[in-house]
Length: 286
Image (cartoon, rainbow, N blue to C red; front, side):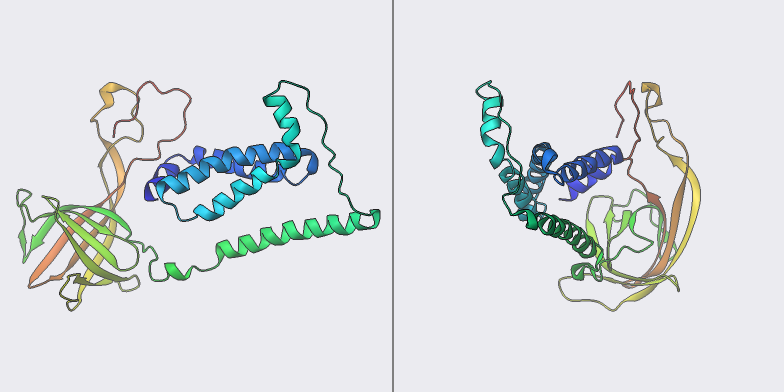
């Protein structure tokens, strides 16, 4: 599921294209004369959505499946014409789209249909923007992200880069979760409750033996110009060349166990969004 969100976010034009397909298909269903075209568009779009949901474990499988089945059922009145056109290579007969109802009910039925569509759109929108109970306590803070540890000191002594216990990355996740990865890949998890007004985080290691007493860590935010990968690589000779870029910095000071720790970190950005361009001589180097 995370991979789906990552590769979709990597290309905003692709997100827009997929969204346009969903919206256009739905708008075409509003009128009986364009309902057939709308159903075909929705079937194509929702087949791709269902494949992503089912094969990547996205937890909206039933809802997307219902939309796909509903769009397929809209083809039932056109089944003979579609069979003649696509299989028998014959002329498709026109389908009677009139509603079999007394004339006095035409306008009430139409108004009822409009009210149902508008009500569904409003309720869906309100449901989408209402607070999610399962997200309470898991909000992103301003420190959210992965930070590269440029300098690490314990009790005033700098830990050399050759030390296997030296942290390489510090990741501050949603809510109060954080973790650090050392030079050999070992991961240590923490409770990291940051208070933005004071700039102090209450930090304690997460261990199977129970929670230790939290220690206050000061978090000093800043920024600096550093060498980063260029946003686009279009020539082979540019591979490995670094350019100046602005990055956030974070200095953390506090107590970890029996030692005083100090971390100087810089924000790590993943180069996913590379922009849209018609011509590209070389693929991006990762």
